[in-house]
Image (cartoon, rainbow, N blue to C red; front, side):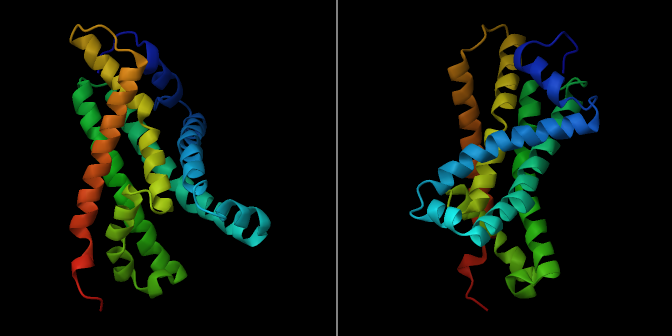
Length: 223
């Protein structure tokens, strides 16, 4: 990308997510970004479920399991996807690549990383904790259906999916600003940039759903 003095969202990224930052600062900022994406989506997921919140608040064991699930699975997934994307974007800042190419790479990276992390976590859970009957192949078979449900916001994986995508809002908006500037257009209002990012998020959800359907063994009879 251009070496000119960055402004707006691009300067914000350089300040908080550059690969030239100390690792601890970069990791802290990425954790905060991940939580900003995760917490609101988690609230939206829990709120409509009848009795779910009261169950968590009246049962220490249930609350502990739920929090452990979020901290050991959800946050690491969202953090890892965001970190991969931010590192890649920061590296691209010092190369001559256009905003369209950067957006396409982020689109692919978030989609692939999210699916790959689920496959890896499910596979490891089967081997290490006996999940999925202790069968790693069975664990991989349920990745597709899990991602289909995630795209429909039907499970906690859906919370993690939309948290990772919402975390990309400022990145999408920054890339749109760069594209407009390079093509001589006036800066777009914030609302238009948000709508642009939401369209990108919708496309990612559709792509992930299509891939998940394609790899789901639902058409096969149970073994």
